[in-house]
Structure formats: C-alpha cells, structure tokens
Image (cartoon, rainbow, N blue to C red; front, side):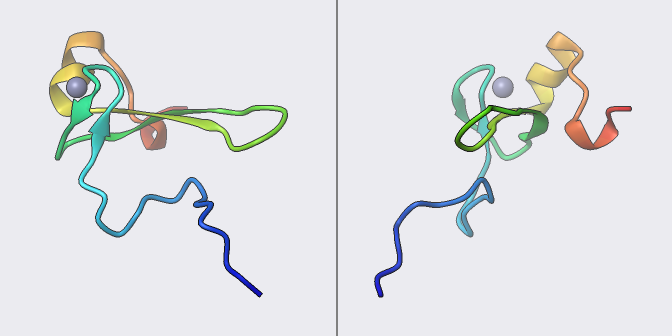
Length: 64
Ligand SMILES: [Zn+2]
C-alpha cells in the first residue's frame, strides 16, 4: 500500500511561515482564519506581524 503525497492542513516540519497578505515568506506569520468549504480542505490564511498591524487582523486563536 502506497502512501499518498497529499498533505493535510497541518504545516510541514520545515514550515517557516507564509503571509497571505503580502504573499511572501515570513517568520512571524500566524493563522488568521480558516474558511470552511463544503468539499475539500478549508482555506487557511496567514498574516505576518506588520500586516496584522496595518490591517488590524486578529489571530485565529485570539478571535472570540
Ligand atoms: Zn505580511
């Protein structure tokens, strides 16, 4: 039985962070939101510290 290469939403071990707002790698990116979809995995959005400040984004873990 072969393992598929499909990876779940969990970040890879070598994950260094990615900001979806400035669309670039970031060491300070945190999860902002998870958009649930009817089928397939949810869409995750990450934002780095500067983008969070500029756009007043609230990390997913700190949202009500
Ligand atoms: Zn950013």
